[in-house]
Image (cartoon, rainbow, N blue to C red; front, side, top):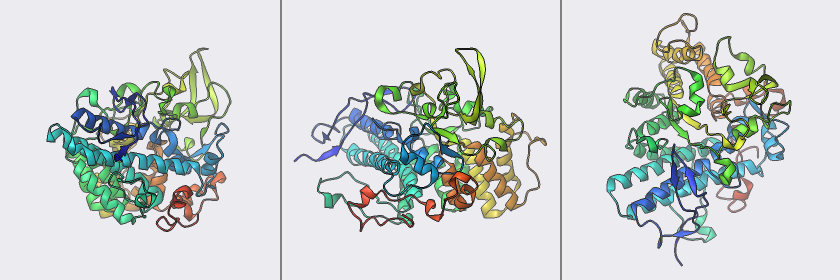
Length: 490
C-alpha cells in the first residue's frame, strides 16, 4: 500500500500573502506522485499556511474559531443573540465541557496544521532544487508548527508532540500520549530557533511569509509566557535592534487599514483576501459576526460589559473608536447610525459593509506594539521599574493619543512609577491595545488573574480555576483515555 502523505482539502486559490498562491485541489496525495519538484515543495508550504486561514465548511482557526476560546471566554467578549450555536454560548458563559464542538474543532485545526507542517518537513529534502530554497521552506514549516504548538500548550497544557507524518493508518500506531508542558515548550523553542535563519524580508508578492524577525518575536512571547525574563528581553531587543524596519504606525487606525496590511508594525499576520469566505474556503468571519447591518439587532460577537471596557478609554484615546464602533455612516442613506451598544470594529471594512464575506483585513498574530509592551514587562519583572521600561509604554500611549511617538509628552506620559504601578499600567495598556486580537485570555492566564478579572462580568461569574485550561476534547480521549488524561475540573 502506498504511504499516505497528506490530505489536502483546499480551495483552488489559497490566500497566504498579498497575492494568490495557486494550488490544484488534491486528495490523498501519495509520495509516488508528489514531492518531486521544488514547485511541489512550495505548494506543500502553501498548504501549511492555509491551515491558519482556511477550513472549508468551518470557521477558520484565525478567522474566528480560536476567538471563541481566547476572547469570548475571557472577560471582554460575549455571545450576542445572533450566536445561536449552543456550544458558542456555553463558552461565553463558561459552562462548556469536554464535548464542546468549538474546542474539538480548534484541536483538529491546530493538529491539521501541525500535520501539514510535518509532511512538508519530512518530504521537502527529497525534492529536486537548491538546498537554500528547501531549507527556507522547511524552516517556514517549523515556524508554523511552533506557532500552533504555542497555541495548543497554552490552551490545554501538555499535549501530544507529533513531529512526523503517519507511516500507518493503524489506530494504535497513531496514538500519541500527552507530553509535559516543558517538553512542548522545548519543541516550540527548537523550531523557532531554526526559523531564526529565515530571510528578514521577501519580495512584495510574497508578503505575509514567516521571517527571522517573526521567529524572534514569537520566541520573545514564548519566553515571556514562561517567565524567562532574561531571554524575553534578549529576543525583544533583537527584534527592535535587528534592522528589520519594524515600527509603530503613526496612527493606530492604520494597524487595521486593509490598504496598509503587512506594513511596518505587522511582524506576522494571518492573511485574508476579498471573497475568501464567500467562495467556500472559510476565511475571516469577523465582519459578519460583529456587524449585522444598520439595525438594533445584536450581532453574534458583542462587548461583554460597556462600563468595563468601552468606557475605560480616556478622552482622546484613538484606540477606542478603532476597536469599537458606536456610530457608522450608512452609505445607503448618508446618515450617521448610532448602535444601541458599541460593536467590535477592528475587522470591519467600512468600504464594503454590505458583503460580510468580503473582509480583507488580516489577523495580527504579533505586531511591534506587542514587542514593546513585552520588553517593558520583562524588564520590570526582572529588574524593577526603569526609565527604559516606562518609555516603551509611553510610546504606546503617545501613539494612542495621536502624539509624536518618540517625543516625550507630559500630557500623556507616565512618570515616577513603582514596579507595581508599571505592572498595572502595562496590563491596562494591553487591555486597551489588543481588543479582539486573541491576546486577552492568554494574558489573564499567564498573569494568574483570569478568575478575579472574569468574575467582574456578571454573566461570567461562574468562572473558576478550571478555566485556566480547556478540556481535552472527549472525542480524542475516547481513542486513548489513558494517554490523554483530562484536565482538572472537566
